[in-house]
Length: 99
Length: 231
Image (cartoon, rainbow over all chains, first blue to last red; front, side, top):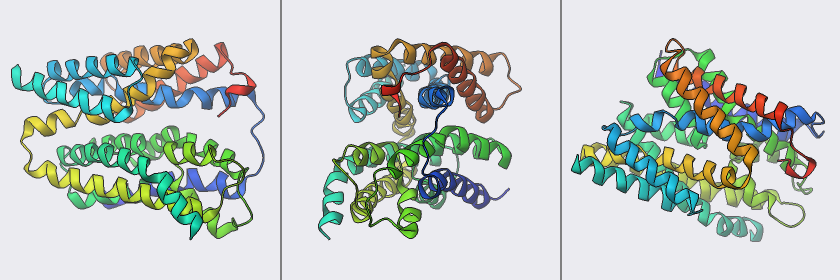
């Protein structure tokens, strides 16, 4: 299938998700269960997207593991997103050059 | 124009953050074997990090459009909620056309800045905020995709980790402070490893959807949120 079709569909779906409630709905969601699911969903999505994919994100799993460890450690200390991601990439780079 | 320029100024930190993150996305697209134009088109039409990475993985795997649509729905559904929330804060400058335009720019960071504003928000303010963020996101993608062609492979390999590291930096601080978030994160982690290594017939795109939905539903049943935690 053409890449353009994928991109077009992806863009359309993402836009509709944003546009429909923002433009047409004015009510509040009442269900506590649905609100709870929506509250937890971003964390679950990010976790499932990151693991185990991060271990294969660089050429070498050992370098990726070191980068992951650095990211976990620095984010534990609440460092800004950009600091964590650059430091983790640098760690993976040096680990990749060494091993 | 005053509101527009105020939006630009408030959006500068977002732009800088987006520049570096989308640089990583540009690299990721090139490593996946797509063109510079595809990279820029994805970023210019989607303006979202997690959704684009997930969408890219479906495209690279040659997944079906149904898989792509479900994937975007699950990952980006939080924007619907942010849209609900923001729609309560709009001033009279918002008619239907303004709503149609501004909804394109609802992202985690723009939502965060806009909802932190005191009182109602103006359409021109949102235009400024979205414009500067959009410029950062698209130009970072372009730079990353172009740099990906001539940077040594060791460097692009290491940069491939960047977006995932950012996701970790988003997850860890709240998980540290809130045991229920920690629970959903650990649950999703275990489930994702299980599905990836044991249920190998499930594709990467569906794995994310299944793991995310199951773990959030279970967590919502075990630990329903209280009023003040609402998005």
